[in-house]
Length: 296
Image (cartoon, rainbow, N blue to C red; front, side, top):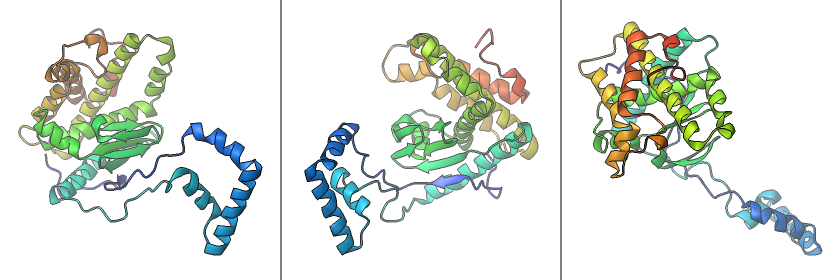
């Protein structure tokens, strides 16, 4: 994939090396703490905190927080994270791919809001909650951000046998596809049905949502190739191989278990390939209605 020397997105938030900090106070402690603070003993304790704060010049609320909840939430590591040369190149690559998605979706959608790509290591807290790198790349509609631990690319290459830079680009394009679904209101429509459906029925909708994100990734690839001629020999096959590698049926087989279609959440390898390929071949958003398609 031809990516070097091209525009990089400014919507990349590099959080590698940041620590999650201490966990917030357990809700089970809040009631007893309130009762303590409004008791006679509590009044004495609070008074003591303000005296200590006055002597030391500290924030009394911070002292109280440290007393009941540890050291508080630390949003960044104490020293600057230093990545390997390979990691730094990957950051540049991700920035270019994200810029390509911005160019395409700004041209196809009115009032497109560009998402932020958060690069993290090991663990991260998003508006959707706390996650580790074990969950893989994901999109959070609550803060309109994509989350990616670069180690996933090593897993994609070594554990899933799906190497290549265009395979990596497909991963980002798929998550941006979820952002497009969010902007179009599709994601909320699906999520609002959750309480009215059985787990099996909702899983089927989840599969259709994921396959549509694959289709939208293909739409991105179609328009980027037409505008910038980025593909080299074998690139398209890399993306299709990646789609094949992360199909539910293949992952279940690889884990040593039996294939259980009712538990699928992303679609089979064949379905993922089919919908990415359809998006790439047509470049037409209107042809990506996976929810009413007769054959997935």
